[in-house]
Image (cartoon, rainbow, N blue to C red; front, side, top):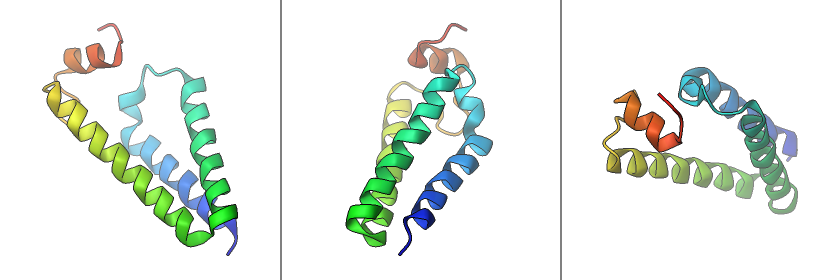
Length: 99
């Protein structure tokens, strides 16, 4: 299979994620957001090139599951709602941002 399908899937997920959840990254430097996209896309391309579509799909699903689990655990430990990131002062403190 063509690795471009896997790359399209990952970049599509990033696009949807930025549209839906970008407001949680409002103070993150743009270069960090771009670097994250490049790293994840590059890793997906490498896995797809060497392991094939099945391994690439498993990689994408595993990374998504790890990310969601980490976000849920970390936010709940700090008393922050996982859908609204409220209270904002706790969320900003966790991120190292000033209120």
